[in-house]
Length: 298
View 1 (cartoon, rainbow, N blue to C red):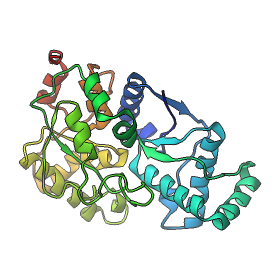
View 2: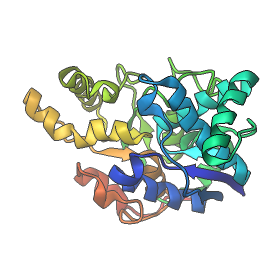
View 3: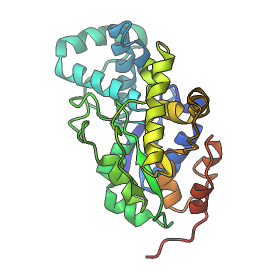
């Protein structure tokens, strides 16, 4: 049994319930025990550019709570993963900094962080600990012919030091491999490693929306049937904002956006309802046809 404390962050429980639903369902099927820690709070990411010390303290609080339960952290949000992992690396490598942070933790919540846990993204847990072979064995629905474009985003792999050099941020492959393990085809498209634009949405809306517009266009031109993401805010930029982008640029993309656990659940024979597909905003007849396909031949 693979055991983790599930870190949902702020966005997933409020705006992308389909992601959480599919992650819990697929984790259970694959032997991943995810424990909820109700006291978890924000990772501190929104404050990093404003007050880094406060952001670090917010991360340390969550790390201490997980350590108290004896569980490593598994996060669904790439920004949360990157923030917590980077804070963890700083606290583990700098005892003086950890002591200063612990003084504040003890004064506010009566806890300390000893630096003993690890932080990993859910997709990384699937790739490294569950493994591609076990995922292939769990596939029961034939997804051959389904062409999917992988979107890695910025914080899934960066900063590389915080992620233990997991995958290559300039030429990543782990999400493509996870897609291929379901039986679907991962299609290459130009600029696939680029940002979704979410990080600057509040500062420069026009530029922020130009970034996902370019990626949507390139994915469609590459023949993708859907875009696959592993971060709730990336989903917001590509799915929630897609109609708005179409109006701004007088274009029509109609590109569905799937969280990887949704794709995985469909491949494992789960229904659209089970993986929250009814909550996805951009619908596709071709995608739905795969949901009702016959089981894969063994």
